[in-house]
Image 1 (cartoon, helix red, strand yellow):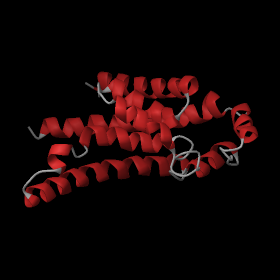
Image 2 (cartoon, helix red, strand yellow; image 1 turned 180 degrees about the vertical axis):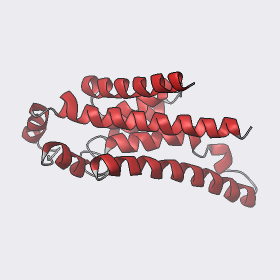
Image 3 (cartoon, one colour; image 1 turned 90 degrees about the vertical axis):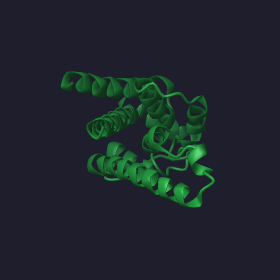
Length: 182
């Protein structure tokens, strides 16, 4: 089991890294990696992730690898339409609280990993840690400079690779908990 776990984590990290180098869009690359590794459908979710790159629409806010990870965790552990629209308000609220508690716990763990490694979940802060400065993602010259300094060569791919590994690890741990409780 440990060998398989290690293989999955390494594949998640390698694939996330490679996808960010090749395709760009940290949120999409993070989400796509987790979708493929854990066989999750969701073309609509992948399309929705497009807007989260560059710290959400190039705003330099929350890191796209982080938001892509939140989306991936939501695909696995989030609330579905049937639960959201359950006709019994008490059942609906109780189930929502269970789902929210689990998902929030996993997101908190992901955020803690980002904080430990990068000191933040904010794109500009992570760039400052990696490059010694952040970039105006709306400015084409700034984007070229970021690329020249390794933005999509190793810096952002490293963030995506780490994020996909951490997310895969959280999912594997959660699956093990579920299996143990059965």
